[in-house]
Amino acid sequence: MGITIREENSVDHVAVFQVVEEAFKTMEFSDHSEQFLVERLRKSPAFVPGLSLVAEHNHALIGHILLTRITIKNGDQVFDSLALAPVSVKPAFQRKGVGAKLILEAHKRAKDLGFKSIILLGHADYYPRFGYQPTSKYGIKLPFEVPEENCMVFALTENGLDGVHGMVEYPEAFYS
Ligand SMILES: CC(C)(COP(=O)(O)OP(=O)(O)OC[C@H]1O[C@@H](n2cnc3c(N)ncnc32)[C@H](O)[C@@H]1OP(=O)(O)O)[C@@H](O)C(=O)NCCC(=O)NCCS
Image (cartoon, rainbow, N blue to C red; front, side, top):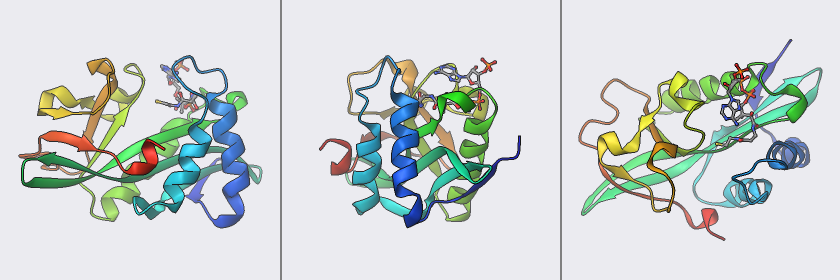
């Protein structure tokens, strides 16, 4: 299956909305509003140009991934990081490697931009294959009442998490 991963542009916004909406429609642990989260994050200071990516197949959008800026705070220490949220693949194209392609390309681009780590809240069975580890291993806490196994972190560079611990601060757009 020919898949192209590329940076999202403004012409894609409507199609991305639909991909995200469709992907989460039947998800149990979802409030089915992730498409609005993407719209808010795009307009927020947390948005990083170049880290909203789409997957294309036969000139149609079938997947999307978004990484946005967050910080990890420990007293006066502030560490820059990224949140992976959300990643979406149209149901008809799931389990064909599209999600993996989006995640790996997002990692590469984030690293090229100088980011050192990525935090996410997600399926405990899916992300470890990409190198994600429990945040608890690093003393990193997420400000949500969620099972520990769903809170994960990935170091984009060898020493990306050296000395990093504390509480993740998400931008306003995650809560509105
Ligand atoms: C999660 C998601 C992005 C994965 O994309 P994908 O293209 O289907 O995934 P890939 O093809 O790269 O990988 C497939 C493997 O991922 C795993 N996987 C996919 N969805 C999963 C899920 N919801 N829970 C656990 N594992 C999952 C399976 O092990 C699958 O392997 P299998 O074919 O042997 O069963 C996609 O399924 C999706 O959009 N789901 C709905 C939205 C969502 O849950 N987003 C993530 C929020 S954390």
